[in-house]
Image 1 (tube, rainbow, N blue to C red):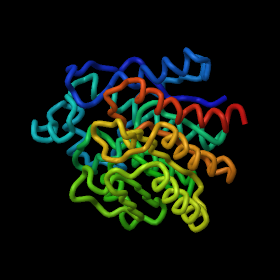
Image 2 (tube, rainbow, N blue to C red):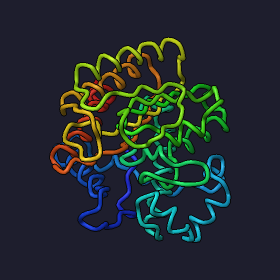
Image 3 (spheres, helix red, strand yellow):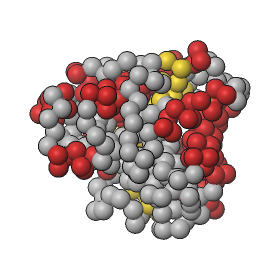
Amino acid sequence: MVRFAYSEQYFYTLPDNHKFPITKYQLVKEQLLYEGSIVPEQLIDPGLVEEEDVLRVHTREYWEMILSLSLPQKMIRRIGLPLNETSRGRSRNSVAGTMKAAQWALESGVGINLAGGTHHAYADRGEGFSLLNDMAVTARHLLYHRQVAQILFIDLDVHQGNGNAVLFQGEPSVFTFSMHGQDNYPIPKEVSDLDVGMPTGTGDEEYLSTLEYHLDRLFAELQPELVIYQSGVDVLATDKLGKLSLTRSGCKARDEAVIGRCHSLSIPLVMVMGGGYSPSMVDLVEAHANTFRMALQYYQLG
């Protein structure tokens, strides 16, 4: 049974005009349940990440400001989300979800977090809707406990994973691959192990052929023991914060390129949601749901 990290406890409301669609997490979950793709027993609340895991990535000063809700307003504005007890809990829960998904992946091949992908958070600050970096905390936990020796980040959000790029520079056990919009946030960009910037307006054909080429090379050369896949759907043409032009079917094919390879090579796969800001909730929810339907097709039905 494919397991999904998910919690209702830490949702919070944002102004209607806010750019971050917090309701998408609930809507994706509800859609998967409604159509029968999953059953409630597959949804598991991962709890909250422990301090010792956070401090393998984030500085104590930054962590203590989060705990005391005392981040300066300038830092909060850069993150782009309010800081309160609920949003702090939400972030800790999201990190715990990716960590739990990694354990499931090692046990059964795949683990999914219906949240996460906060790849913009650095050691001492957050930005871009990222307070704590769930991907980095998970990777450091796995390496610290010697559960794996080689991790591959496949980051296909439209925005470069700049926090991850800096956090793992010079660390050969984690390879950071980010394929993103070259003209989009963040500007300037950091240096990942492999950055592939796609021109504004790139459509399905060019995007998918480029991705297939790099995935084939990376899997052959790295032979990763675990993949953490940031599956943001802000690559869609309809996304208001993205500058690429993928269709929903193109986004689905992108997911299959990653998921199918991990499945066929028996590489444990951790999936996190990442970004998605289409004004149309149909486009947004369906694109995210397609990602998880693809995983279910390979790991639950295949």
